[in-house]
Image (tube, rainbow, N blue to C red; front, side):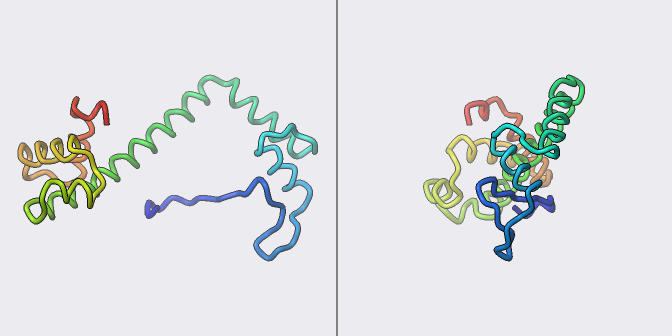
Length: 141
């Protein structure tokens, strides 16, 4: 994803490690719990209790949701920043139809990016992306 975030991917359906060895029982139980099954082991019951506590704590829940919203906003700005850059570099080299097709964007996005670029030619791609996302025309995109 090229965003410097660290991610761990867990397969809740499998119980073998990358070498093909079976994982320990605690890990199996945790994966089973993460897959939506009720906790069976002491370890998975402990995780379940911690999850329930966090869900009951409204402040933590709000904080968690805020962090997720912030991350989603940052990701969306990053995607639009790339789009702005591609349009800035290639506008005039291709027809509008080609730009829409090549960059897989909607006519509204193309219109809004061009509008922001013409109104703020000295802004960088990230500022333009933020401006585009704030435009009322983008509400339906």
